Every structure is written in structure tokens, then in C-alpha cells.
Amino acid sequence: MARGRSWALVLLAVGGALAALGASQPWVRLIAEDALSVDEVVVTGAALAPLTTAAGLVGLAAVVAVLAVRSWLRVFVAVVVLVLSGFALGQVATAATDLSGAARDWWRVEVAALADSASAETTAGWSVSAVGLLVLLAGAAVVLVYGRRWSGLSSRYERPGVAPRRPRQGAEASEAQYWQALDRGEDPTATDEPPHEPRR
Image 1 (spheres, one colour):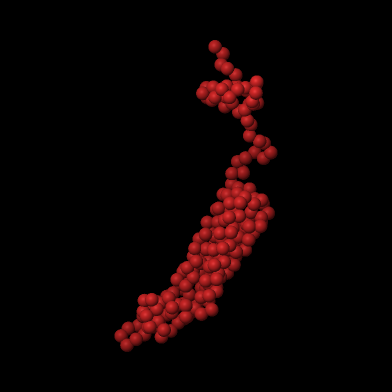
Image 2 (cartoon, rainbow, N blue to C red):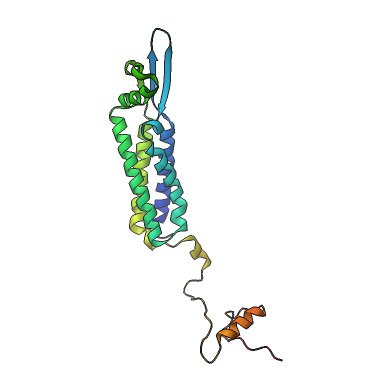
């Protein structure tokens, strides 16, 4: 493979999987009690940092895109992953500074003031997403630097160093002769010789 492509694909795949996995895990467990009932809710990373899930899925899709597209399109894919992962990492960092407060703010929509008195148990799920997003950023950076030099999927079916043959022009063969050859079911580019009129 071309320089860095194997590493880029591994980084994008692993980073995308970790980011999405971490976002699906519980980050905070809240328990609120009043005189009549006990309410409990598990708050996942997708609720506190919704861009994390999107970044993970885009990172996984970028693995295929990097192989399928070429040149500037590959650079565009890398930029999308970089921007989305950067914003997602910002969301994770903001939530991680006060997981309990972020979870209470999220739950307050449903239980109002009861969320303020809820006890909170935090987990390390956010760190999985954070690591995944950092790996995604690294993979996208490799694509951004080296991606334009890599070949695409279609290149394996091309003969290197051999240009496609084109019909001869001028006195040797006219455009009409090539159309007539196609009508007869012949390939006018299969040989170097121009098509000839059928004998009558």
C-alpha cells in the first residue's frame, strides 16, 4: 500500500468504533427520591455529547471512502472527519468537566427540580469516546497529509504505463469507418490497424 494508507485506515476504523462505542455506554447514573417515588435514569454519552456518535459513524464510513475516492475528494473526507471529531471532542471535554451537572441539566427537562437533588454515579465511558476521537483525528490527519498520493480501488484494474488506445485519425481511418465497425460488432480500438470497409 502507499505510504501511510494502512495506518490511516486502521486509525479511522479503531477511532470510529471506540467513539461510537463510548457514546453508547452509560456516563452517569442518576437517582432521585421524593416522598412518593424513586426515579432512576442512565444517561449515555449520546445524550451528553451527541456529536460523538456522528463522528464515530463518519469515521467508519471514511474507511471505505478513502479507498473509493481519489485526490481532492479524499482530502475533503479527511477535513470532514477532522472538523466533526474536533467538535465532538469539545463536547466530550465540556461534559467531562462536570458529568453530574451535565446529566442533571439533561434530566431536568423531564423531572424539573427533582433533578437537582438526584445523586449521581459517574463512569469512565466518556474516556472511551475521548480516546476514540483522538485516534480519529490522527487518522484523518494522515489522510490529509498523504491522501492525494494514494491510488483508488479502480487502479488495480488498470494496466500501469499503458495508455488506452484511441482510433487513428486522418487519411488512414475516418470517423465513419469506426462507427461502421461498431455496427458490425467489431471493436475498432482492439488493434492498431484502422477498420476497413467490408468487401462487397
